[in-house]
Length: 83
Image (cartoon, rainbow, N blue to C red; front, side):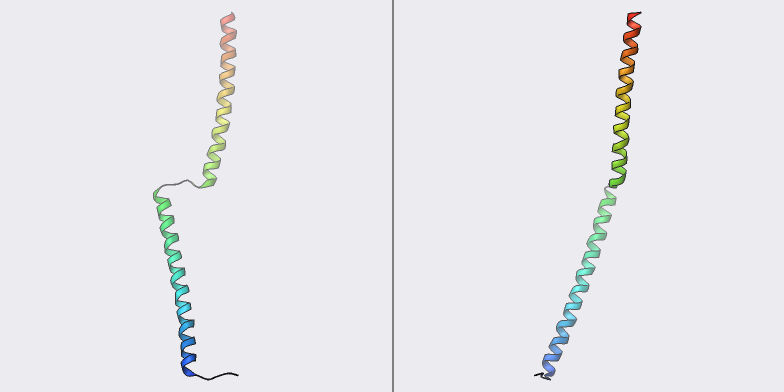
């Protein structure tokens, strides 16, 4: 049984329009928030994760190289002191 009540039809159209408008506002707010967060991150000059990981790996390699060279220098100094 289907009724043809114009008041209910108008109310249904109004609710549909309101839901669409609410979704549009929500999407717009999300876009603005994302833009503001990106701007804030750029102002802080944060480094991307990939760059951080690359620098971390390079630092570890350099630390190992320094330790190796320090051990070599200590050995050479020990040898020179014996002579």
